[in-house]
Image 1 (tube, rainbow, N blue to C red):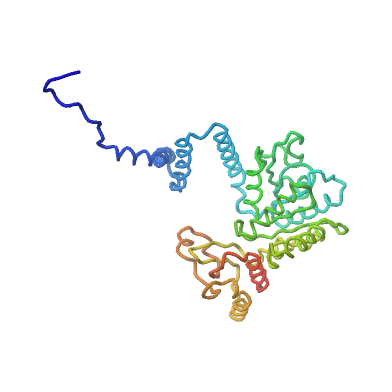
Image 2 (cartoon, rainbow, N blue to C red):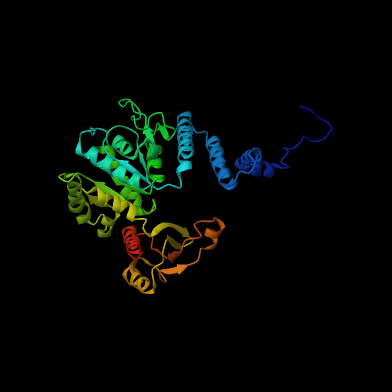
Length: 360
């Protein structure tokens, strides 16, 4: 034991501890600043900071190796897909889903090929999972130049089909969830032909996203051959076991179109954008961008017909709102604004159909 009158033991140095904690909380921001400084002209710094903050949080939580590998692989797959799709963002695209087991001599294959050719002839691009069957039919119909593929690596399939293999517009993925994201996110319309569990999963996923507003409104065609019963049987199940028990609204049937006619399928997809262009939320206002505004009489009729989905006020013309102007977001287009109830997306689809009907 030491004795004497020397200086007392030093207390723990707490000076600046609060600053250290604050700096630690800002690690993601600091990393983002360093990154942005090394990439002159990079925009959207707030989003990079948020992504890096998530990475820092993974480190703080001592996330295990398997979860980190999944996160790294999923992010890398999405980044690669974004890069491949970026040059074609201005083109309308339709994604085709259906069985990989459908043979080239099957009438369903011919049906898919015919529809894809008709859409490509009108300037659309076709997106598929790049495998065999209906996926190959869509790409054969569209042609290599108007095809985009998002392939899934499976042990029992031999990679991408011949119509897209080795093409720079092909993305290879390991995970179904990243693949499904790109097949849905990048498209303006969807076509589903008969298939197995995977096809049904994709059809119900699409319907769920459209019904809940997690995907922007878009045309969804369930296509069969003239003597086929696949989708009529599916509709019977939905009517008897889903709708009859109140598990969906009657208006939700407006979210899709069943047809056996290629011309009708093409019209459903292309006609959806006859007048309607796109939408955007600005605060509590839903803004519908159009090619042509309805006249006063048509607007009054629309307000009467769709008052049930407007929470207050009316459906009314508007100039581009502040956030739209700031982002140069289709400011040249006329638009309508309404306070949509965010629930009845089947009715919103009916409103879009009505707006398409008033176009000259």
